[in-house]
Amino acid sequence: QVQFVESGGGLVQPGGSLRLSCAASGSGIFFSTYLMAWYRQVPGKQRELVAQIRSSGSTNYADSVKGRFTISRDNAKSTVYLQMSSLKPEDTALYYCNFGSGAGSWGPGTQVTVSS
Image 1 (cartoon, rainbow, N blue to C red):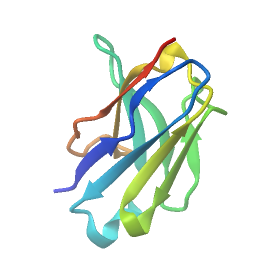
Image 2: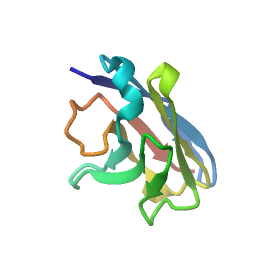
Image 3: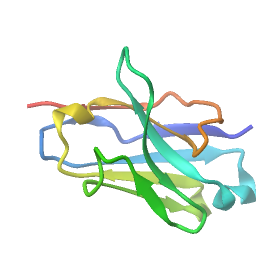
Image 4: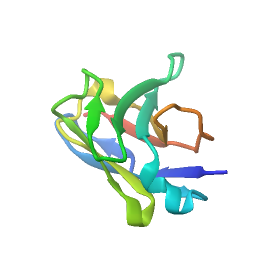
């Protein structure tokens, strides 16, 4: 079973940047074929899809982060990244990665807090 471990979160001021990483274990050579995604969740709200990246490298983003966030992947390291710039307080959430379908096992997430 594929497991995901997220890292890179923290406290940042509005307008700042962070780079999140997600390491997938147990995927082996198949990682490169997976549609991967970043999600985020605020307490009391549904988990939200933030960005997706296909095996081809093509991407799509939620309207709320378009132009500010960039998803990328390193198949050799079975890792997905989320570069976040121009952060806003409303980006504060627990961030997770998973398959694009969201059908995988959820990791612990990494907390991003945007506050002055």
